[in-house]
Length: 326
Image (cartoon, rainbow, N blue to C red):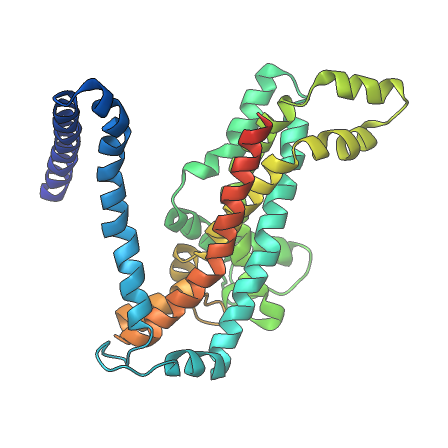
C-alpha cells in the first residue's frame, strides 16, 4: 500500500512541478519586450523538454557507447575486443538470426492481418464494425507479460497419459497427434515462431485501427471510377486503395519493426531466453544484470542501436512524407 501512495505522490508532485516550471518560464518571457518575447517564447518552452531528452537519452547513449569499448567491469579500455568476441560467438550469431527472423515475420504478418481485418471491418456496418474492431483491438490493452502468461497456458505440455490442459496440445491429441513440449522445441526454431504469435496477437489490433483510418480517407470517387471501368474488388483494393495508403502501411510496418527489435518481456516470461529463443534485448539483460559484464552488455546495446537507427530515420521520413501529402 505504501508503494501505491508513494507512486501517487510522485505523480502529483511531477505534474505540479512541471506546471510550475512552465508557468515560471511564461512569466519570465512576458517580462521581456514583446518583440524579444515572441522570438524566444518557443525556445523557452522547448528547452526543458530538450534538457530532459539529453539527460535521459543522449547522455546514457554516449555512456553506453563508451562502455562498449571497456572490459567486463567497465573500467579498462579494450578497444573493439567486445565486438570481436560477440561476432565470434556462435550463440550470439544464433541470437542475431533469431532477431532477423522476428524482423522478417512479425511486421509482415501483423500488417497483413491488420490490413485484412481493417478491410473486412469497414464493410460490416457501423454497429458490427465497432464490436468487431473492439474485440480485435482488446489484446492491445494487455501488458506483454500478461499476454505471455496467457499464451504459456496455451502452449503448456503435459506428459502423455494425462489430460492436456494446453489448447495447442489438446488440438494435437484430438486429431491423433502426440503432445509436444512447444517451448523447448527448437527444431526449425518452432518455439521462436510460437513466441512471435504472441506479439502478432497483441499488435494486430493497432495495425488494424491505423490502416482502417487510412482506408477511410481514400476518395470514394477513385473507387467508383474503377468500378465503372469494370474492376473487381481485388483489383480495386490492390490497384486503387493500397497505393493511396502506402504511407500509412509503411508507418505501421516500421513502428512494429522497431518494437520487434526491442522485444524482451515475452522472451523473459515464456522461455527465459533458453532453447535458442534469446534475442538482443534479452541478451543485454542477461549480460548486464545477471552476469555483471558491463562491456559486452554495452556492446550488445550498441549493435541494437545501430540496427534501430536507420529504422527510426525511415519512420521520421515516412511521417514527414504523410504530413506533406496532407
